[in-house]
Length: 315
Ligand code: NDP
Image (cartoon, rainbow, N blue to C red; front, side, top):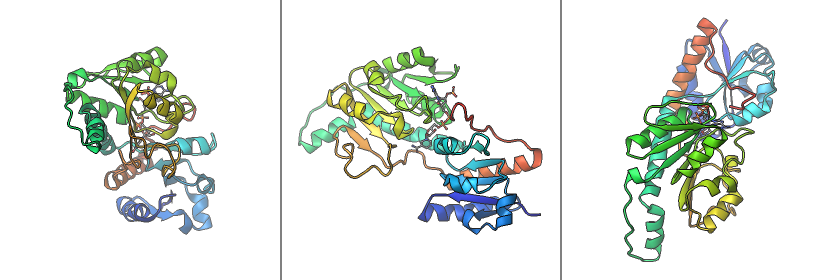
């Protein structure tokens, strides 16, 4: 019997269409991919694997015999929170292309901050011609919170561009060329030596609100922030205070508590904030569907699953 693999997504328009074309092509010969709305009642009962992209968890719950879901997203905090503990296991997307894209974004925005672009942009708006002293990359320390798939690649790319990089993770790590730390003392060490702080931890019960006034107070005066993880990891009010007091010089934000960022949000017009519409590392359809197809095919042949999300840890 041909395997039917439900596809559940809250994505609209172009993105939904891209998946609807690419997934059946990539899974040709493995199974038939069907959008949730096209499933018959017996197909809902029979489904053991589903592919999801930020799905409505009610639709996932409507497939009672699911063993696991493969997310097309790397961040799965909502799924991990909403699906019952004894529900399907969650496999998130781990795509080397996404790590490459994220590391490019981290490098680009670190260079933007390193070369004082926010300051020169503000001067231009005031028609001011003022040169500032050039700092070399080796004089600009960058700290990365989160040394996973995305954080490690970003750290190594920054290192290759001459920046001294230190990183923080939950478990101890040894990565050539990087100074690494773990635990709460480790966090303060990394913060204390971050002229630019890059946030790439997943959103969990432990990381919600992690980047707050306490964290800012440990950063050197004049430090800048890049948050590419999730909005709730950052305390918005504390960020505004740290920018307005001059303790922080600038923040580049790609992720927010509410997305799209509400029209009246103070971040939009703040001179020291660069707002990006969650674009630092979008899923690349072509490479993502290949990884999903490989993972499902391997599971069907060997029963082996890729690493699943640890529900206790939240990522
Ligand atoms: P990984 O799960 O591979 O890595 C997460 C890292 O964070 C690990 O190093 C982990 O430590 C560390 N970490 C988690 N919790 C803690 C904690 N409590 N204390 C210290 N360190 C912690 O995730 P990815 O690198 O793939 O992705 C990171 C996040 O980036 C995603 O969860 C998502 O929110 C965001 N993202 C944003 C995108 C965008 O376009 N803006 C695109 C894709 C993802 P350890 O290694 O010890 O487990």
